[in-house]
Image 1 (cartoon, rainbow, N blue to C red):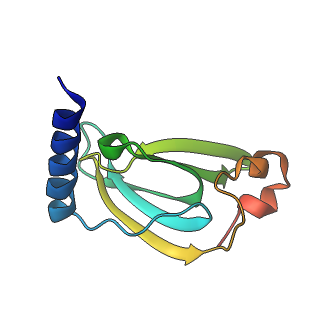
Image 2 (cartoon, rainbow, N blue to C red; image 1 turned 90 degrees about the vertical axis):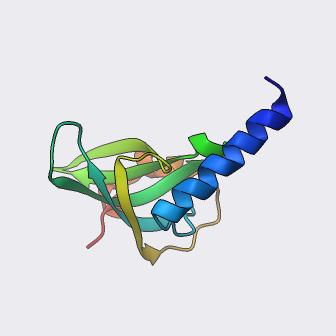
Length: 115
């Protein structure tokens, strides 16, 4: 495969995925609510957290979301064009000065907690 062919296929896949679901402009610092379908389950599970990193690579674009659950920090990486993710909603945008917010791991839990 040539690089140009892969880029064309990448673009087509992204355009088709955006027809099915609307993806908001996601940036580090956004507090999002993500509804996704677990394998072999009908019910949609909800994950709410702050985006601490975004890796752009076409179809394989991922976001890393952090949340405090029962006093323990949980980070999950989600591929945003996955068919399992049904909806992504931006609740609030926090103003941040960095592209990667990995320093939140070492801060007090209140910095990764929200209502």
